Image 1 (cartoon, rainbow over the protein chains, first blue to last red):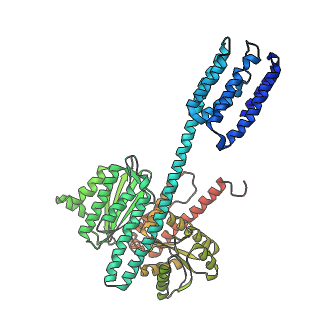
Image 2: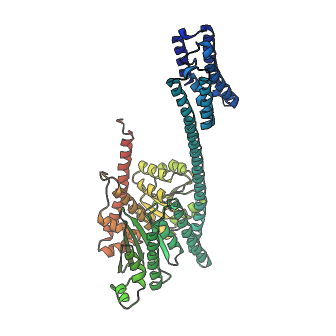
Image 3: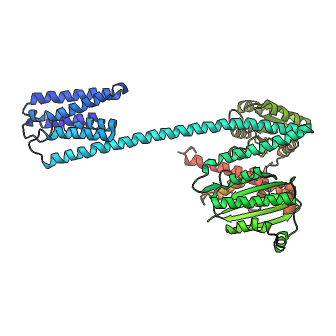
Length: 354
Length: 214
């Protein structure tokens, strides 16, 4: 940019050479400014020489170049000798010291321009006005850009660190899971006390695996929405019945209230399994998420129950299942249906998404 | 007897799996500790079934799966995974693996799975069935002009039952179908998923100008 404004300055002065009262001196000044432009470009290019002293010198030279104009041209001159060339110094200040630098440089150049003049016309005023406005604004924008760049760097750094932590955690977890699975396997084969140890290892393994899966979906938790898949997983891990949870992969986001009630209803299903089938029962939970509907299925491998059992119980005044499962889901505008057979009992909880 | 290759970076696991398979009368034709070794030994060993740990040190479980199947489409890949990492499992299945077990499965379950996979059957865990259902749901919710195959109602119904832990036998009894029909339906879901994956890859390639006409 400096090169462009320098060429502009040289060309304009060559064109207006008749207006100079001292052409030789003016030529010297123009040549000096051209030399300084080269030097400045070289100095600004190196980090070690990009010092405040350089910026001050740059501005002083620009101001001086404006200031000497009256002695070179006639007293009632129109355009200053450097003209737009001073832009280089102004922008350097704005970039380096932001809006304050831009303002100081703009004021200094304006004074240098206005003071030697005999009369200030509308054109002069316009130029000064633009310089005073432009300097601070360019500075302010530079500051914003630099701040944004810094913030982006910080965010990238944080993301990289988090990713690395996750990777390490995965490596550690994977190792622990391998060992737990191994203990479980060999324990079951050895029998006796070892089998008990193996069973314990199996419980821990399932717990840890479920924790890792919940961890995967944690960042999705925001703005009053919760991850239903993770919440079901957490509830199932804590439940005394042995439960396997199948999810669609990734987070299933629902409103906090919907999440709490649905998990409570699913837990009521499991409590029911514990009460009717016993602690040796196995259960499965499947969560499905369509665009407009969430379905949670809970199945056990018990002997099943006769059809109409739930309605009978409700009619007899035992409202346990009716209120804790149906009541909750219907309260959310959904439906809870139960099916039973030789293959066990299955609750299907369907919730519309508003 | 099935010719099996075991790929796992934990020697203790590799040995245990090898012992169990041999005790059941299968032949372990090769073992490998990482993706590079696995790819180097696979062609000469020509196993019918590869028991593959998804968490290999060179992070190559999915890649190894597709490379092996490209080399020998008749081979079967059974994924064994400790942590059940969802994305990786789904990716490996899309790449052509036809079975998935968590490592805590008992040795009887493992041997049963190897035999079934060798017969061309698919081995699903409830967790995998949930993931596959979720994937088809995402395809269904995608752009309407997407040419990819959807599941039929029957296939969805059966997959839901697999996801809630029902065996093929229980499903057959509940739906009054033959065991073989249930097996076919489950196999179809995987076939569709793998075909959809190829369609998606092709679309991606065309969109990115990699189809050779760009």
